[in-house]
Length: 440
Image (cartoon, rainbow, N blue to C red; front, side, top):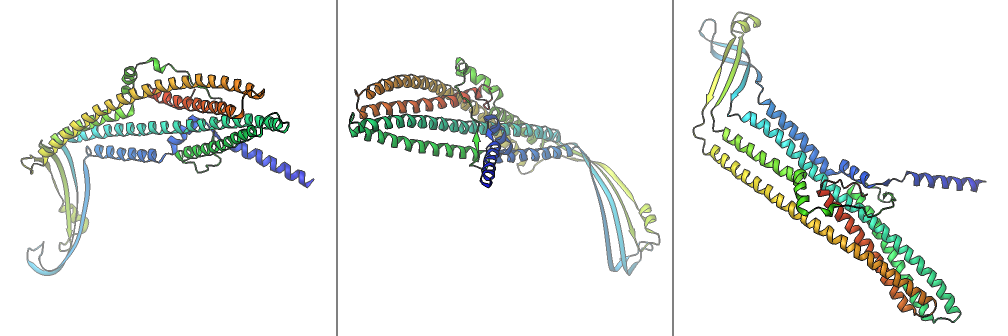
């Protein structure tokens, strides 16, 4: 009875462990990576900094307000504020005041700084989205690598199962003296090679799972796995479009291009700000001050009221010469604008080259996959024919082993070209605006 209870407990625990083990879809992997990736988090913090910069720019429009107060005491010869006579006394003085200032005109630099802060946030958002694009591609590649290794393992196991049947049958034939023992040794060698292939496939599958888990920042490598889905090569019409058509669309929404375009606008705004420094500035000011001294026979409140004073006005500053600082700043801003425009052109050229390369790679991968399918069909037929001849003793084990090896190579190549085509296809579709988190 106790043994039955223990057995039931173990079975239930195994069931719950398996039930709790999550099987990740590609969409879930991409979403998780985008939420937890460290680089993305750092870029999001940069966005928060840019929000603070925008508040700085807004603050430049608001008048400043500052208060001041001073308490001082002196001993020795000083002028009595009541009699005007020099006396050797101890004197305590309190002064207080407030001051306010506002920029009335500064060559519109404040306004342009605010516009620049808004543009900078847009640029940083494009940069963040571009990072997310790169991470999505990396996750999709890692996910497809697991699918590739998993399918490789399934094929290797299936091949070994067939070889086991041949091995058992050959043992019987050797025992009955129908075939020589050399045939058995040849099949045993084939079985041993396939066992090694299974081990290698298992290791490759495990390593690919670890690689994706690390990309997702998941530490429980052993229990990480992706969903078991019946996966077929997706149908797509993307290759019906020319590379130029794909590029023309990509350039309208790609975040790296938008980032470069915004950098040009930022450089233009920096040039305007630099030019604004050559204009006169006009500032308004207001000051209120009062004081108290213990040498005057009046209380503190009365003295503050009696000795207060107000000053206000405007101040005009005209830049005449400042050691070439302003002119050099303008020159540097012009150079920065030229560099930003050149970078935009370079980014467009890079994108065009990338799209052309992706289109050619996808086209080549499709042809390679189609050729691998044809080869697999032919190798399968050749293997079946060889198996029939081997079973009736018309082919020796070495030739049959060669036919089987060629079939295994064809199966492996079909799997490799299949997933190579899928990834290249998804990358090309990605440049056409099709999300990469769906493999169907």
